[in-house]
Length: 72
Image (cartoon, rainbow, N blue to C red; front, side):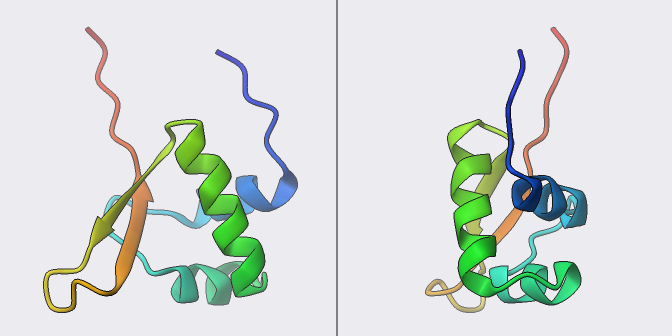
């Protein structure tokens, strides 16, 4: 499968880890605006590369991490 991703989405994907990270933290790590990060996350979610989770301490806040893939 081939994805044509914008440069910002590639930057955000590169900054993601296995543990959840907030969009604010991703913006800080990538030096992109929060709006650009949110757009990049939307594209990554639509392509099934990122999963969105809610933090247990505060369900209003979301975290993002790379989606785990398994080879069957």
